[in-house]
Length: 263
Image (cartoon, rainbow, N blue to C red; front, side, top):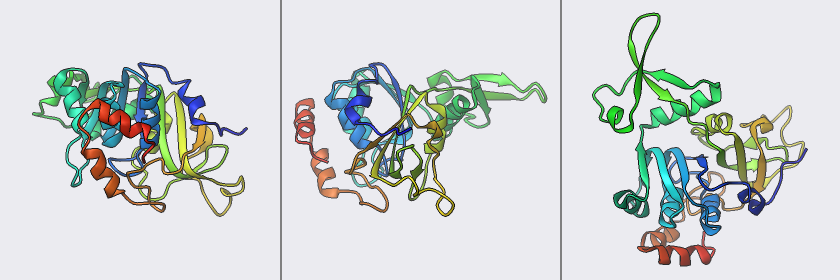
């Protein structure tokens, strides 16, 4: 059965207050196009989850769409510096920063994928994160060792942008896959946006899918869906647009930018 649909149809099914896990990493293959669409339709109180996020969190915080961000890193990690709208949201109290390490975000998503309420990890010894986020400990019943227990995070929706997908949701991912496989297994529903829809026979004996359509709920063709970030094999970071975006200082300027349909 074909899973191809239109983005507006998917947005209608995403509720205010949803936990949304975002694929890609910083400025690479991040689903910026979906973030723009969520902002434009006025979604509110979203909880964003990702190891390392950038523009998608920045613009959604700037439009007042986000209540919580659970991430190991929020910033552009390039010459574009910090995420100014995210920072303002946290400083004003409008956005709650659930500060993780990338390690603990991945563990929380893995716990969801495995169907368990938490997973134990070593590490974080001496870190303020343990108290800041309220991590609890658990005793290993075999050795008695105290380990950190990371509670599962089960996103309502996972959003991944890939290079190619067929109508069944099987995907080709060029370059690093980051945590996309884990998000696909952890989320209740999964939205795939792609640069290109490929024929049914694209994946077969000589071409293996990088992500199986088994976990996919919706497929939407969204060209330039990671722009102005990069999508390996299709386009690099659009530095001119990024420089323009970084000049925006107010929600009004951000709204005008989004209405222009600039990508």
